[in-house]
View 1 (cartoon, rainbow, N blue to C red):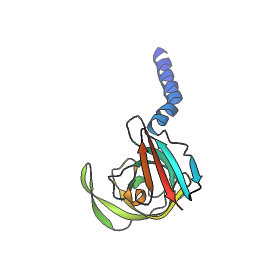
View 2 (cartoon, one colour; view 1 turned 45 degrees about the horizontal axis):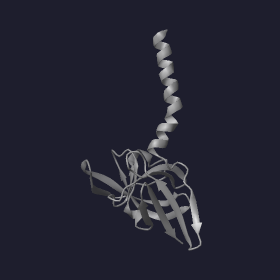
View 3 (cartoon, rainbow, N blue to C red; view 1 turned 135 degrees about the horizontal axis):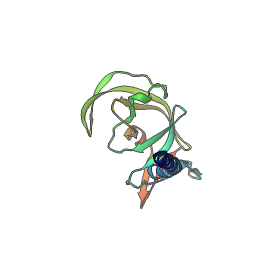
View 4 (cartoon, rainbow, N blue to C red; view 1 turned 120 degrees about the vertical axis):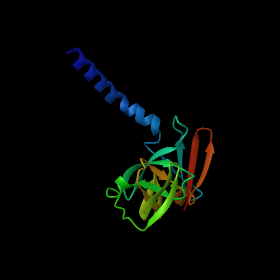
Length: 158
């Protein structure tokens, strides 16, 4: 009985604190956008505890979590998400990752959104053995971004 009570307590505590753990990994779960008088949309992201910028967004109107990665040439998407995100595998291409060389598949994202920032027809790579979506330069080069302290402001000019 004691073991069952301990297991139930651990389960309950895990359930109660999971939301806090998620907020520490992704402090940008509720993205706020502002439209300025200069015909631009701004989104400000907070850095997470590990020093990364992680945010909730959408690919083809499906909610996803992005890890911003200026070292990634394209948006890199884990292979297991292709069906849910309605992505088609294109040509096989060799890619280099932090874990070495592998193969990936070219694809295109019809619509990618972060708050009220919307981009269309984005080049991306479907990558096996990837655990999270890397928001690479195929998106970031279309935006202006400024980092100050623990915040990153992203701007899209309309």
